[in-house]
Length: 164
Length: 100
Image: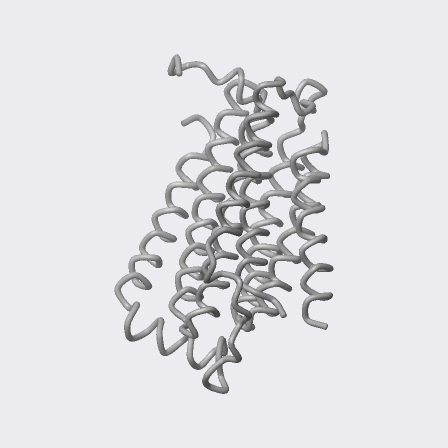
């Protein structure tokens, strides 16, 4: 049963990500990226990371993609920017061979084929456990992230100002 | 039953699609979106291995990756707006001021 859902969500994700690369219009790419991110959120929930799934939908599929779509609307792209995917034969072969080798390598790692063990404690992936980890063991990275976000905001305002 | 191999294989596929977009597309907006795809592939592996080991450290790392991706997209889009104001295009092939 779980496996069926996994394949549904995985197909959704892969189709969405293929759309990002294949669509000509950046707006279509952005919308199919939303679909792909939503599929990844479903897969997070399937792996027991419920809070992370909610945050993925809120932050990624919500905030970040609204920002991207907003900028696409603002930029007034001309016909020249509707670039088609331009791939040479050697690039295509290289990507195909590299991807297949990577997947083969993954499948050869024997310990990966054990099924997921049921989560040990009841609240696995919940807000309480994640919050405890974030504010005890990972407090310094957490604070560093807040500094990073502040720097990013200031940098974005400075860069996007007119006449810089 | 779902195994870690399922998740890691999907992660490898997503990463490959992201690299493909990175290499082949010339619209800088789509390049940013391809980076998002690759970061999501990494997140997927983090979560799968966290589940495999029964801990939640991987999920915390995925949180940091999400925050980092938000910062990256913000600055990247701001740079794109600045470039668009100067040149009127977001074609990555025409950005050759630094002779890269």
